[in-house]
Amino acid sequence: MLKRLWLILGPVFCALLLAIALIAFQPVTVKHSLTAEKNDAVALTKAGFKSKYKKVRALTDPKHRFIPFFGSSELSRLDKMHPSVLAQAYHRNYIPYLLGQKGAASLTHYFSIQQISKELENKQAVYIISPQWFVAEGANSRAFQNYFSNSQLIDFLQNQTGSPYNRYAAKRFLKLCPDSEFRYLVEKAAKGKEMSSSDLSLLALKEKILVKEDAFFSNLPFFNSYKKKVLSKTAGLPKNFSYAALKRIATKEGKKSTSNNNFGIENTFYSMRVQRQLKRLKKSQKFFDYTRSPEYNDLQLVLNQFAKKKTNVLFVIPPVNSKWAAFTGLDRAMYQKSVAKVKYQLQSQGFTNIADFSKDGSKTYFMQDTIHMGWNGWLELDKVVTSFLGQEQKAPTYTLNKRFLKKDWANFTGQPEKF
Image (tube, rainbow, N blue to C red):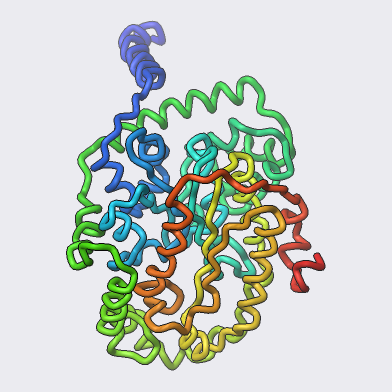
């Protein structure tokens, strides 16, 4: 009976194995396409964030200089002064590649960076640090899983050294993604154990299949995100570049777009997200605390990756809407304390390129809503970004301190210099 069944199904099974082998081991060639790369750069989709092929394709384009902009929901606020729009309008020598959506934080970016580690070596990047990341519970499990892919984890597992950073990252992953199919390998990494030859063979096979799948879907027809999100907004900008002229436009746009409330919040956002809950939201943030959070440790993971690859990074610290902060009772002294803690962690390790806008939340039309920059805010950021990216520069000398991986730093609330 078994012999007859094998005679019938054996050839089919062998053919299937052969097909899988051919798919897995046939090399993938990256095909550069500026149109596709520009669309990927502003698509801000989960699939795009997870895709290694898309990111590598853009960041290795020999003719065009794509710069990764790491962040979260602020990147999707594409008005006329957004970095992507101004870079297009004035033919800058760089194209922002936006990486981050709502809920993304440092741990999300750390695992995403595993996919583009080589592409970041001796290059430049922009990293926007939102104060809202530094909540007591740290990265949200659901949000983390939204942007996670096995491709990220495979790259992480294939490059284990047993370092404190590797062990910490593995432990954080197990907490946020406990049902991973590679759980047993992550547990080995968390204990600092080496991957066996069979472990690495399994990872290599899985990687080849995922690379094929990623390349196939990445080369399918795409929606023209760049035309809708970027090109459509360049039409009303001055032909000749002028910050004075741009500020007049930004101020006019901000005034028109925030006419239905006294908080300087964009009209649609206020109507749909705020107005009906106004009474409930009053003093709702008076107990918020950004000074204690595992996010400080997660940020250290990212800093270690940048240091290893000598990536020259501009760190951006955005403000909160001052009027909204006053209404909700957010403790501004606490907020500035968290900013000081972040800056100490950066500067004490050599990350000296910092654009600190944390005290600018009361400036006219600087914010688009409660926590996101817009109009004049983007314009001020553009001044720093163009200066930083105007010419390629080597990274500062980094000196990493493993103490920033410790829980005592995550919970430290004193003067950072006394840590």
